[in-house]
Length: 506
Ligand code: UN1
Image (cartoon, rainbow, N blue to C red; front, top):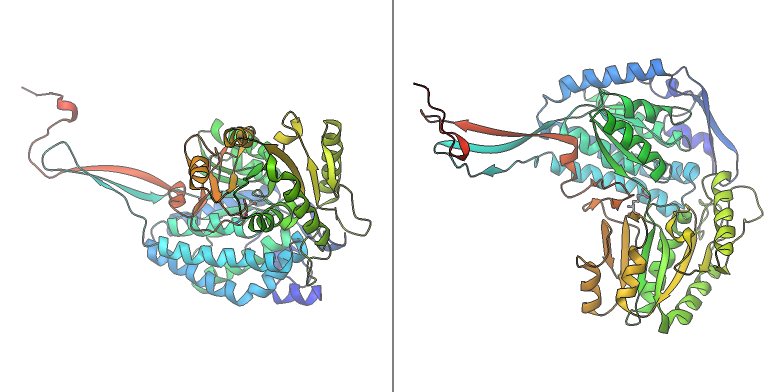
Protein backbone atom coordinates (compact mmCIF):
# COMPACT_ATOMS: atom_id res chain seq x y z
CA UNK A 1 0.00 0.00 0.00
CA UNK A 2 1.31 3.46 -0.88
CA UNK A 3 0.79 5.21 2.44
CA UNK A 4 2.10 8.71 1.56
CA UNK A 5 -0.19 8.91 -1.47
CA UNK A 6 -3.19 7.72 0.59
CA UNK A 7 -2.53 10.42 3.20
CA UNK A 8 -2.15 13.02 0.51
CA UNK A 9 -5.48 12.09 -1.08
CA UNK A 10 -7.10 12.55 2.34
CA UNK A 11 -5.51 15.98 2.83
CA UNK A 12 -3.13 14.73 5.52
CA UNK A 13 0.15 15.10 3.66
CA UNK A 14 3.04 17.49 4.25
CA UNK A 15 4.50 17.96 7.69
CA UNK A 16 1.58 15.97 9.12
CA UNK A 17 1.07 18.26 12.03
CA UNK A 18 -2.53 18.44 13.06
CA UNK A 19 -2.40 22.20 12.61
CA UNK A 20 -1.38 21.67 9.01
CA UNK A 21 -4.27 19.28 8.40
CA UNK A 22 -6.85 21.86 9.44
CA UNK A 23 -6.40 25.46 10.37
CA UNK A 24 -9.34 25.28 12.80
CA UNK A 25 -7.37 22.94 15.00
CA UNK A 26 -4.95 24.71 17.32
CA UNK A 27 -2.17 22.39 18.44
CA UNK A 28 0.99 23.08 20.34
CA UNK A 29 1.01 20.19 22.83
CA UNK A 30 2.86 16.92 23.33
CA UNK A 31 3.63 14.82 20.25
CA UNK A 32 1.55 11.75 19.51
CA UNK A 33 2.61 9.00 17.11
CA UNK A 34 0.18 6.83 15.21
CA UNK A 35 1.29 3.24 14.48
CA UNK A 36 0.30 0.60 11.97
CA UNK A 37 -0.75 -2.28 14.25
CA UNK A 38 0.02 -4.84 11.55
CA UNK A 39 3.69 -3.89 11.32
CA UNK A 40 4.48 -1.80 14.37
CA UNK A 41 5.74 0.98 12.09
CA UNK A 42 5.09 4.64 12.87
CA UNK A 43 2.68 6.25 10.42
CA UNK A 44 2.85 9.86 11.54
CA UNK A 45 3.56 12.10 14.52
CA UNK A 46 1.44 15.12 15.44
CA UNK A 47 1.35 17.89 17.94
CA UNK A 48 -1.69 17.47 20.21
CA UNK A 49 -3.92 19.90 22.07
CA UNK A 50 -2.86 21.60 25.30
CA UNK A 51 -5.32 22.82 27.91
CA UNK A 52 -5.06 26.29 26.34
CA UNK A 53 -5.89 24.80 22.93
CA UNK A 54 -8.86 23.04 24.51
CA UNK A 55 -10.12 26.37 25.86
CA UNK A 56 -10.08 27.75 22.33
CA UNK A 57 -11.91 24.72 20.99
CA UNK A 58 -14.67 25.02 23.62
CA UNK A 59 -14.98 28.77 23.03
CA UNK A 60 -15.35 28.10 19.30
CA UNK A 61 -17.99 25.44 19.98
CA UNK A 62 -19.93 27.79 22.23
CA UNK A 63 -19.86 30.50 19.60
CA UNK A 64 -20.93 28.08 16.87
CA UNK A 65 -23.78 26.94 19.08
CA UNK A 66 -25.19 30.47 19.36
CA UNK A 67 -25.57 30.64 15.57
CA UNK A 68 -26.25 26.98 14.77
CA UNK A 69 -29.18 26.55 17.18
CA UNK A 70 -31.11 29.25 15.30
CA UNK A 71 -30.73 27.56 11.91
CA UNK A 72 -33.91 25.59 11.05
CA UNK A 73 -33.35 21.88 11.60
CA UNK A 74 -33.96 20.80 7.96
CA UNK A 75 -31.34 23.38 6.90
CA UNK A 76 -28.98 21.82 9.43
CA UNK A 77 -29.78 18.54 7.71
CA UNK A 78 -28.45 19.97 4.44
CA UNK A 79 -24.97 20.17 6.00
CA UNK A 80 -25.16 16.51 6.93
CA UNK A 81 -26.45 15.60 3.46
CA UNK A 82 -23.38 17.26 1.91
CA UNK A 83 -21.10 15.46 4.34
CA UNK A 84 -22.72 12.24 3.15
CA UNK A 85 -21.85 13.15 -0.45
CA UNK A 86 -18.23 13.96 0.49
CA UNK A 87 -17.95 10.67 2.37
CA UNK A 88 -19.23 8.76 -0.65
CA UNK A 89 -16.46 10.33 -2.75
CA UNK A 90 -13.77 9.44 -0.23
CA UNK A 91 -15.18 6.09 0.88
CA UNK A 92 -12.43 3.90 -0.59
CA UNK A 93 -9.58 6.00 0.83
CA UNK A 94 -11.13 6.58 4.24
CA UNK A 95 -11.88 2.88 4.55
CA UNK A 96 -8.27 2.11 3.69
CA UNK A 97 -7.11 4.52 6.39
CA UNK A 98 -9.27 2.68 8.93
CA UNK A 99 -7.65 -0.57 7.76
CA UNK A 100 -4.20 0.93 8.08
CA UNK A 101 -4.54 2.57 11.47
CA UNK A 102 -7.11 0.38 13.28
CA UNK A 103 -6.11 -2.91 11.61
CA UNK A 104 -9.58 -3.79 10.29
CA UNK A 105 -9.81 -5.98 7.20
CA UNK A 106 -10.67 -4.14 3.98
CA UNK A 107 -14.34 -5.04 3.97
CA UNK A 108 -14.79 -3.89 7.56
CA UNK A 109 -12.86 -0.66 6.94
CA UNK A 110 -15.17 0.08 4.00
CA UNK A 111 -18.16 -1.00 6.08
CA UNK A 112 -17.26 1.48 8.74
CA UNK A 113 -17.30 4.36 6.24
CA UNK A 114 -20.61 2.99 4.93
CA UNK A 115 -21.90 3.18 8.50
CA UNK A 116 -21.06 6.91 8.49
CA UNK A 117 -22.85 7.34 5.17
CA UNK A 118 -25.91 5.48 6.48
CA UNK A 119 -25.82 7.73 9.52
CA UNK A 120 -25.83 10.81 7.25
CA UNK A 121 -28.92 9.57 5.42
CA UNK A 122 -30.63 8.75 8.70
CA UNK A 123 -29.76 12.10 10.29
CA UNK A 124 -30.95 14.04 7.23
CA UNK A 125 -34.36 12.40 7.53
CA UNK A 126 -34.33 12.97 11.26
CA UNK A 127 -33.72 16.68 10.71
CA UNK A 128 -37.35 16.88 9.54
CA UNK A 129 -38.64 14.70 12.36
CA UNK A 130 -37.59 16.41 15.60
CA UNK A 131 -41.14 16.15 16.83
CA UNK A 132 -42.84 16.64 20.19
CA UNK A 133 -46.15 15.33 21.54
CA UNK A 134 -49.32 17.29 22.06
CA UNK A 135 -51.02 16.10 25.24
CA UNK A 136 -54.66 16.50 26.29
CA UNK A 137 -54.88 19.27 28.88
CA UNK A 138 -57.25 18.86 31.83
CA UNK A 139 -58.06 22.59 31.71
CA UNK A 140 -60.50 24.23 29.28
CA UNK A 141 -58.97 26.32 26.50
CA UNK A 142 -55.46 25.14 27.32
CA UNK A 143 -52.97 23.47 25.05
CA UNK A 144 -50.25 21.27 26.48
CA UNK A 145 -47.38 20.17 24.28
CA UNK A 146 -43.68 19.48 24.26
CA UNK A 147 -40.93 20.68 21.98
CA UNK A 148 -37.26 19.89 21.63
CA UNK A 149 -34.51 22.50 21.55
CA UNK A 150 -30.77 22.25 20.89
CA UNK A 151 -28.80 21.43 24.01
CA UNK A 152 -25.33 22.93 23.55
CA UNK A 153 -21.81 21.71 22.75
CA UNK A 154 -21.57 17.93 23.05
CA UNK A 155 -18.35 16.11 24.03
CA UNK A 156 -17.78 12.92 22.03
CA UNK A 157 -15.19 10.46 23.33
CA UNK A 158 -14.57 7.51 21.00
CA UNK A 159 -12.55 4.30 21.03
CA UNK A 160 -10.02 2.95 18.51
CA UNK A 161 -12.19 0.04 17.37
CA UNK A 162 -14.77 2.17 15.56
CA UNK A 163 -12.55 5.16 14.90
CA UNK A 164 -14.99 6.99 12.61
CA UNK A 165 -18.47 5.40 12.75
CA UNK A 166 -19.08 6.16 16.42
CA UNK A 167 -18.17 9.81 15.83
CA UNK A 168 -20.79 9.78 13.06
CA UNK A 169 -23.47 8.28 15.34
CA UNK A 170 -23.00 11.17 17.71
CA UNK A 171 -21.78 14.15 15.72
CA UNK A 172 -24.23 13.88 12.82
CA UNK A 173 -27.30 13.48 15.02
CA UNK A 174 -26.02 16.24 17.30
CA UNK A 175 -25.54 18.48 14.24
CA UNK A 176 -29.14 18.14 13.06
CA UNK A 177 -30.27 18.64 16.65
CA UNK A 178 -28.43 22.01 16.65
CA UNK A 179 -25.41 21.03 18.73
CA UNK A 180 -21.74 21.45 17.82
CA UNK A 181 -19.50 18.57 18.90
CA UNK A 182 -16.03 18.45 20.42
CA UNK A 183 -14.43 15.14 19.52
CA UNK A 184 -11.80 13.45 21.67
CA UNK A 185 -10.76 10.44 19.56
CA UNK A 186 -8.67 7.47 20.69
CA UNK A 187 -4.92 8.07 20.86
CA UNK A 188 -4.56 4.94 18.69
CA UNK A 189 -6.44 6.38 15.71
CA UNK A 190 -5.62 10.08 15.32
CA UNK A 191 -5.23 9.94 11.53
CA UNK A 192 -8.77 8.64 11.10
CA UNK A 193 -10.04 11.45 13.33
CA UNK A 194 -8.07 14.09 11.45
CA UNK A 195 -9.23 12.87 8.04
CA UNK A 196 -12.91 12.83 9.02
CA UNK A 197 -12.74 16.12 10.93
CA UNK A 198 -11.06 17.76 8.00
CA UNK A 199 -13.71 16.47 5.59
CA UNK A 200 -16.55 17.71 7.83
CA UNK A 201 -14.86 21.06 8.49
CA UNK A 202 -14.28 21.59 4.77
CA UNK A 203 -17.99 21.07 4.06
CA UNK A 204 -18.89 23.59 6.81
CA UNK A 205 -16.49 26.11 5.33
CA UNK A 206 -17.75 25.59 1.76
CA UNK A 207 -21.31 26.19 2.99
CA UNK A 208 -20.16 29.23 5.00
CA UNK A 209 -21.52 27.74 8.19
CA UNK A 210 -20.06 28.05 11.67
CA UNK A 211 -17.53 25.31 12.53
CA UNK A 212 -19.89 22.73 13.98
CA UNK A 213 -17.37 19.90 14.26
CA UNK A 214 -14.46 20.47 16.62
CA UNK A 215 -11.58 18.14 17.35
CA UNK A 216 -9.54 17.93 20.53
CA UNK A 217 -6.77 15.43 20.04
CA UNK A 218 -4.73 14.83 23.18
CA UNK A 219 -1.82 12.45 23.69
CA UNK A 220 -3.57 10.73 26.62
CA UNK A 221 -6.98 10.69 28.30
CA UNK A 222 -6.72 14.31 29.46
CA UNK A 223 -8.99 15.58 26.65
CA UNK A 224 -11.73 13.27 27.90
CA UNK A 225 -11.23 14.41 31.47
CA UNK A 226 -11.47 18.07 30.46
CA UNK A 227 -14.76 17.40 28.68
CA UNK A 228 -16.15 15.38 31.60
CA UNK A 229 -15.43 18.16 34.09
CA UNK A 230 -16.52 21.06 31.88
CA UNK A 231 -19.84 22.74 32.75
CA UNK A 232 -19.92 24.38 29.34
CA UNK A 233 -20.45 20.92 27.83
CA UNK A 234 -23.97 19.81 28.83
CA UNK A 235 -23.67 16.31 27.35
CA UNK A 236 -20.69 13.97 27.15
CA UNK A 237 -21.12 10.87 25.02
CA UNK A 238 -18.43 8.28 25.73
CA UNK A 239 -17.65 4.94 24.10
CA UNK A 240 -14.96 2.72 25.56
CA UNK A 241 -14.11 0.59 28.56
CA UNK A 242 -16.26 0.32 31.70
CA UNK A 243 -13.35 1.79 33.66
CA UNK A 244 -13.24 4.90 31.45
CA UNK A 245 -17.03 5.21 31.44
CA UNK A 246 -17.28 4.95 35.19
CA UNK A 247 -14.81 7.81 35.56
CA UNK A 248 -16.49 10.00 32.89
CA UNK A 249 -19.98 9.20 34.20
CA UNK A 250 -19.04 10.11 37.76
CA UNK A 251 -17.35 13.37 36.78
CA UNK A 252 -20.26 14.44 34.59
CA UNK A 253 -22.78 13.47 37.29
CA UNK A 254 -20.84 15.44 39.90
CA UNK A 255 -21.60 18.61 37.94
CA UNK A 256 -25.15 17.39 37.17
CA UNK A 257 -24.41 17.16 33.48
CA UNK A 258 -25.70 14.45 31.18
CA UNK A 259 -23.73 11.51 29.96
CA UNK A 260 -24.47 8.97 27.26
CA UNK A 261 -22.38 5.87 27.88
CA UNK A 262 -21.75 2.93 25.58
CA UNK A 263 -19.21 0.79 27.42
CA UNK A 264 -17.99 -2.77 27.56
CA UNK A 265 -19.92 -5.81 26.47
CA UNK A 266 -19.50 -9.43 27.47
CA UNK A 267 -21.82 -10.83 24.91
CA UNK A 268 -23.26 -14.31 24.88
CA UNK A 269 -24.89 -16.58 22.32
CA UNK A 270 -27.09 -19.54 23.17
CA UNK A 271 -27.08 -22.35 20.59
CA UNK A 272 -29.93 -24.81 21.09
CA UNK A 273 -30.21 -28.30 19.65
CA UNK A 274 -33.00 -27.18 17.30
CA UNK A 275 -30.78 -24.56 15.64
CA UNK A 276 -29.52 -24.56 12.06
CA UNK A 277 -25.99 -25.39 13.14
CA UNK A 278 -24.26 -24.31 9.94
CA UNK A 279 -25.89 -20.87 10.14
CA UNK A 280 -25.02 -20.68 13.83
CA UNK A 281 -21.38 -21.64 13.19
CA UNK A 282 -20.94 -18.95 10.55
CA UNK A 283 -22.49 -16.33 12.81
CA UNK A 284 -20.47 -17.40 15.85
CA UNK A 285 -17.17 -17.25 13.98
CA UNK A 286 -17.86 -13.77 12.58
CA UNK A 287 -19.05 -12.49 15.96
CA UNK A 288 -16.10 -13.99 17.87
CA UNK A 289 -13.16 -13.23 15.57
CA UNK A 290 -14.42 -10.39 13.33
CA UNK A 291 -12.45 -7.16 13.96
CA UNK A 292 -10.01 -9.51 15.77
CA UNK A 293 -12.47 -9.71 18.67
CA UNK A 294 -12.26 -5.97 19.27
CA UNK A 295 -15.89 -4.90 18.94
CA UNK A 296 -17.89 -4.07 22.00
CA UNK A 297 -20.43 -6.44 20.43
CA UNK A 298 -17.90 -9.27 19.98
CA UNK A 299 -19.10 -12.69 21.08
CA UNK A 300 -17.19 -13.74 24.20
CA UNK A 301 -19.35 -16.51 25.71
CA UNK A 302 -20.88 -19.36 23.74
CA UNK A 303 -23.53 -21.32 25.63
CA UNK A 304 -24.29 -24.58 23.79
CA UNK A 305 -26.84 -27.27 24.57
CA UNK A 306 -25.06 -30.37 25.88
CA UNK A 307 -26.43 -32.74 23.24
CA UNK A 308 -24.77 -30.84 20.35
CA UNK A 309 -21.75 -29.34 22.12
CA UNK A 310 -19.11 -31.76 20.77
CA UNK A 311 -20.33 -31.52 17.18
CA UNK A 312 -20.74 -27.75 17.29
CA UNK A 313 -17.38 -26.99 18.90
CA UNK A 314 -15.76 -29.39 16.42
CA UNK A 315 -17.28 -27.40 13.55
CA UNK A 316 -15.96 -24.16 15.07
CA UNK A 317 -12.45 -25.56 15.47
CA UNK A 318 -12.49 -26.62 11.82
CA UNK A 319 -13.54 -23.07 10.84
CA UNK A 320 -10.91 -21.49 13.11
CA UNK A 321 -8.19 -23.58 11.50
CA UNK A 322 -9.17 -22.26 8.08
CA UNK A 323 -9.11 -18.57 9.14
CA UNK A 324 -6.45 -16.44 7.49
CA UNK A 325 -4.80 -14.13 10.02
CA UNK A 326 -2.54 -11.46 8.54
CA UNK A 327 -2.16 -8.04 6.99
CA UNK A 328 -5.66 -6.62 7.03
CA UNK A 329 -5.33 -5.04 3.60
CA UNK A 330 -4.59 -8.38 1.91
CA UNK A 331 -7.33 -10.26 0.13
CA UNK A 332 -8.56 -13.40 1.87
CA UNK A 333 -7.45 -12.25 5.32
CA UNK A 334 -10.32 -12.37 7.82
CA UNK A 335 -8.47 -11.54 11.05
CA UNK A 336 -6.12 -8.58 11.40
CA UNK A 337 -3.93 -7.50 14.32
CA UNK A 338 -4.85 -6.33 17.80
CA UNK A 339 -4.45 -2.62 18.29
CA UNK A 340 -1.34 -2.68 20.49
CA UNK A 341 1.32 -4.72 22.20
CA UNK A 342 -0.53 -4.16 25.49
CA UNK A 343 -3.68 -5.70 23.98
CA UNK A 344 -1.65 -8.79 23.03
CA UNK A 345 -0.27 -9.08 26.55
CA UNK A 346 -3.74 -8.70 28.05
CA UNK A 347 -5.10 -11.49 25.88
CA UNK A 348 -2.24 -13.86 26.76
CA UNK A 349 -2.68 -13.05 30.45
CA UNK A 350 -6.42 -13.77 30.18
CA UNK A 351 -5.73 -17.17 28.60
CA UNK A 352 -3.33 -17.99 31.45
CA UNK A 353 -5.75 -16.89 34.12
CA UNK A 354 -8.62 -18.80 32.54
CA UNK A 355 -6.43 -21.93 32.54
CA UNK A 356 -5.66 -21.40 36.20
CA UNK A 357 -9.37 -21.19 36.86
CA UNK A 358 -9.89 -24.55 35.19
CA UNK A 359 -10.63 -23.66 31.57
CA UNK A 360 -9.26 -25.96 28.87
CA UNK A 361 -7.67 -24.60 25.70
CA UNK A 362 -9.40 -25.98 22.58
CA UNK A 363 -7.55 -24.02 19.91
CA UNK A 364 -5.26 -20.98 19.66
CA UNK A 365 -3.97 -19.25 22.74
CA UNK A 366 -0.66 -17.90 21.46
CA UNK A 367 0.90 -14.83 19.91
CA UNK A 368 1.81 -15.27 16.25
CA UNK A 369 5.54 -14.89 15.70
CA UNK A 370 5.82 -12.03 13.22
CA UNK A 371 5.93 -8.24 13.27
CA UNK A 372 2.73 -6.54 14.45
CA UNK A 373 0.23 -7.41 17.18
CA UNK A 374 -1.08 -10.75 15.99
CA UNK A 375 -2.66 -13.49 18.10
CA UNK A 376 -4.29 -16.82 17.31
CA UNK A 377 -8.09 -16.78 17.46
CA UNK A 378 -8.78 -18.80 20.58
CA UNK A 379 -11.48 -21.09 21.98
CA UNK A 380 -11.54 -22.35 25.59
CA UNK A 381 -13.94 -24.76 27.29
CA UNK A 382 -14.97 -22.95 30.45
CA UNK A 383 -17.14 -23.58 33.52
CA UNK A 384 -19.64 -21.30 35.20
CA UNK A 385 -17.57 -20.68 38.34
CA UNK A 386 -14.78 -18.83 36.50
CA UNK A 387 -14.30 -15.18 37.39
CA UNK A 388 -12.78 -14.58 33.93
CA UNK A 389 -16.22 -15.16 32.43
CA UNK A 390 -17.36 -11.91 33.96
CA UNK A 391 -14.56 -9.84 32.38
CA UNK A 392 -14.30 -8.40 28.91
CA UNK A 393 -10.99 -9.25 27.24
CA UNK A 394 -10.79 -7.17 24.06
CA UNK A 395 -9.41 -9.93 21.84
CA UNK A 396 -10.55 -13.02 19.88
CA UNK A 397 -10.97 -15.20 22.97
CA UNK A 398 -14.16 -17.28 23.11
CA UNK A 399 -15.28 -19.22 26.19
CA UNK A 400 -17.62 -22.20 25.67
CA UNK A 401 -20.13 -23.30 28.30
CA UNK A 402 -22.74 -26.05 28.06
CA UNK A 403 -26.29 -26.34 29.39
CA UNK A 404 -29.27 -28.69 29.60
CA UNK A 405 -32.39 -26.56 29.96
CA UNK A 406 -33.14 -23.18 28.41
CA UNK A 407 -33.69 -21.63 31.85
CA UNK A 408 -30.20 -22.74 32.80
CA UNK A 409 -28.81 -21.25 29.58
CA UNK A 410 -30.53 -17.90 30.19
CA UNK A 411 -29.28 -17.81 33.78
CA UNK A 412 -25.71 -18.46 32.56
CA UNK A 413 -26.15 -15.88 29.86
CA UNK A 414 -27.29 -13.16 32.26
CA UNK A 415 -24.69 -13.93 34.92
CA UNK A 416 -22.32 -11.10 33.94
CA UNK A 417 -22.26 -7.42 34.94
CA UNK A 418 -22.35 -6.13 31.34
CA UNK A 419 -25.48 -6.04 29.16
CA UNK A 420 -24.82 -5.02 25.58
CA UNK A 421 -25.60 -7.67 22.97
CA UNK A 422 -26.99 -11.19 22.98
CA UNK A 423 -28.38 -13.85 20.67
CA UNK A 424 -30.08 -17.22 20.51
CA UNK A 425 -29.90 -19.73 17.67
CA UNK A 426 -33.04 -21.83 17.57
CA UNK A 427 -35.79 -22.98 15.24
CA UNK A 428 -38.25 -23.09 18.13
CA UNK A 429 -40.65 -20.15 18.52
CA UNK A 430 -41.06 -21.02 22.19
CA UNK A 431 -37.33 -20.77 22.80
CA UNK A 432 -36.83 -17.54 20.87
CA UNK A 433 -39.85 -15.89 22.47
CA UNK A 434 -38.64 -16.88 25.93
CA UNK A 435 -35.23 -15.40 25.15
CA UNK A 436 -36.87 -12.12 24.11
CA UNK A 437 -39.35 -12.05 27.03
CA UNK A 438 -38.86 -10.09 30.28
CA UNK A 439 -37.31 -13.23 31.85
CA UNK A 440 -34.93 -13.70 28.92
CA UNK A 441 -31.88 -11.73 27.78
CA UNK A 442 -31.04 -8.72 29.98
CA UNK A 443 -29.17 -6.92 27.18
CA UNK A 444 -29.84 -3.79 25.12
CA UNK A 445 -29.60 -5.85 21.92
CA UNK A 446 -31.18 -9.29 21.59
CA UNK A 447 -31.07 -11.25 18.33
CA UNK A 448 -32.51 -14.49 17.00
CA UNK A 449 -30.47 -16.48 14.48
CA UNK A 450 -28.06 -13.53 14.05
CA UNK A 451 -24.75 -13.06 15.86
CA UNK A 452 -24.10 -10.42 18.52
CA UNK A 453 -22.20 -7.95 16.33
CA UNK A 454 -22.95 -6.01 13.19
CA UNK A 455 -26.01 -3.99 14.21
CA UNK A 456 -27.67 -1.66 11.69
CA UNK A 457 -27.72 2.06 12.48
CA UNK A 458 -31.54 2.28 12.36
CA UNK A 459 -32.02 0.74 15.80
CA UNK A 460 -31.01 2.30 19.10
CA UNK A 461 -27.57 0.94 20.03
CA UNK A 462 -26.41 0.42 23.60
CA UNK A 463 -26.88 -1.70 26.69
CA UNK A 464 -27.63 -2.04 30.34
CA UNK A 465 -25.77 -2.26 33.67
CA UNK A 466 -22.01 -1.80 33.28
CA UNK A 467 -22.52 -1.14 29.58
CA UNK A 468 -23.74 2.25 30.74
CA UNK A 469 -27.41 2.49 29.70
CA UNK A 470 -26.92 4.93 26.79
CA UNK A 471 -28.54 4.54 23.37
CA UNK A 472 -26.93 5.89 20.22
CA UNK A 473 -27.59 6.08 16.47
CA UNK A 474 -31.11 5.05 15.43
CA UNK A 475 -34.68 5.04 16.75
CA UNK A 476 -35.24 7.99 19.11
CA UNK A 477 -31.58 8.31 20.19
CA UNK A 478 -31.71 11.91 18.92
CA UNK A 479 -33.57 12.94 22.07
CA UNK A 480 -30.35 12.62 24.07
CA UNK A 481 -28.90 15.57 22.15
CA UNK A 482 -31.80 17.95 22.82
CA UNK A 483 -33.55 19.54 25.74
CA UNK A 484 -37.26 18.89 26.17
CA UNK A 485 -39.53 21.79 26.91
CA UNK A 486 -43.09 21.23 28.11
CA UNK A 487 -45.31 24.16 27.21
CA UNK A 488 -48.84 25.10 28.28
CA UNK A 489 -50.78 27.85 26.54
CA UNK A 490 -53.98 29.37 27.90
CA UNK A 491 -56.08 31.08 25.24
CA UNK A 492 -59.06 31.65 27.55
CA UNK A 493 -59.96 34.50 29.87
CA UNK A 494 -60.01 32.46 33.10
CA UNK A 495 -57.15 30.95 35.09
CA UNK A 496 -58.20 27.41 36.08
CA UNK A 497 -55.53 25.67 38.15
CA UNK A 498 -54.42 22.07 37.70
CA UNK A 499 -55.46 19.43 40.25
CA UNK A 500 -58.56 21.54 41.01
CA UNK A 501 -56.60 23.88 43.28
CA UNK A 502 -58.50 27.08 44.17
CA UNK A 503 -56.63 30.32 44.72
CA UNK A 504 -59.13 33.13 44.36
CA UNK A 505 -58.19 36.72 45.09
CA UNK A 506 -60.88 38.94 46.71
C1 UN1 B 1 -18.54 -0.87 19.08
O1 UN1 B 1 -17.83 -1.86 19.05
O2 UN1 B 1 -18.28 0.09 19.87
O3 UN1 B 1 -22.91 -3.66 16.03
C2 UN1 B 1 -19.67 -0.61 18.18
C3 UN1 B 1 -21.73 -3.56 15.70
C4 UN1 B 1 -21.25 -2.25 15.12
C5 UN1 B 1 -20.97 -1.28 16.20
C6 UN1 B 1 -20.02 -1.74 17.25
N1 UN1 B 1 -22.26 -1.73 14.22
O4 UN1 B 1 -20.94 -4.48 15.85
